[in-house]
Length: 228
Image (cartoon, rainbow, N blue to C red; front, side):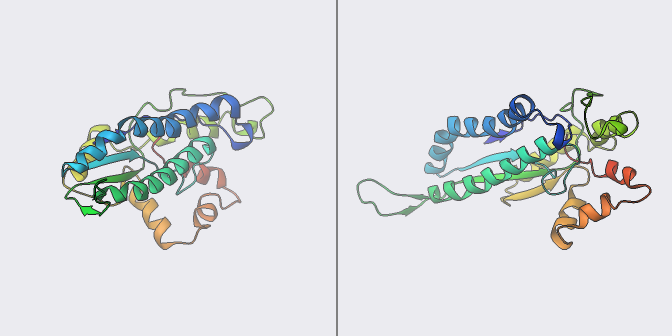
């Protein structure tokens, strides 16, 4: 089993992103790091399937691409890329349930296979956001929010998180017990995110959390619920 859990997040408005440093750093950990790790160990996983065992890749995704976390565009985009990568990897590794011996070129069904799972993660207690109050640029469009809203946004995911041990135990239990769902949901607000994504229209989160008018700033805080 291979678990890709490393992650990095830097809260920053989309219009203030430092692409060459901050964004590339986030993608290097959250996306390219996963790709490198899979390439390093995929041979062992395929060999395990060849021997009749079930091999599993578990990627720790996020609700962030499902419900947009404001001022988290770089992180959101990296997790969206991870989800897409895992979905493609799942299809590409699926044929390794069937072996093609060089001598006959006739496919042979094996008892093992390589599964690729993505855990769509909500709020979990962690230290992924290490800066308690990162500064907004002096010319940011959002400087008026710097003293009140911005500090709340930075730490919002840690206000009511699922405890780390409880999250880890739940994920391990599901994987070990044979959960082979391509996506499964864990963490604070994860099931609510699933319900919103499954049953409501695409623009619901924008209209609900950023509805405009008096109090809309408070609503903006409410959307910052991902696994940061």
